[in-house]
Amino acid sequence: MSTLATAGLVALGAAVGAPLRYWLWRRWDAPGRPVGTLVANTAGSLLLGVLSGLALGGHLLALLGTGLAGALTTWSTLALQTHGLGRRAGSAYVTTTLVLALGACAVGFVAGSWLA
Image (cartoon, rainbow, N blue to C red; front, side, top):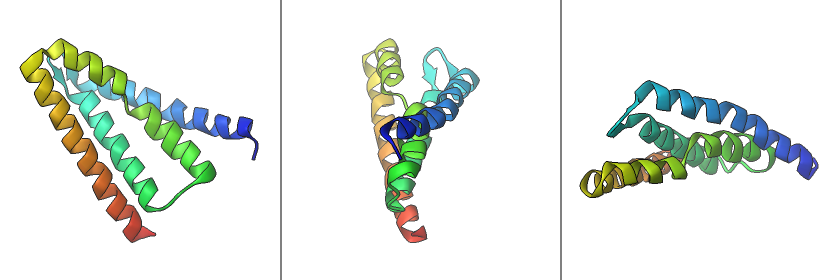
């Protein structure tokens, strides 16, 4: 498959991941309570862990990993929300996000390896 076709798969996955992230943000985020973003980042990390555990590559990884999970997760929103929370709450939010996202990725990797 050509590079252009692979880019199309990434765009297709992102067309699902980005609206899902937006929905989570609108559904659960509130000033000082960025729950939707936390859920999106944790879920995307779980998905990437599963895909890695399954040892997926090529087109499926482009569609589901780079496209879907990449558009679902968000570093820029995490940074902006952290800044808006202030020093103490922002530090707690970053720590919580990292622990949950890395933990979800590890659980996903083990589950994906087991399924493979």
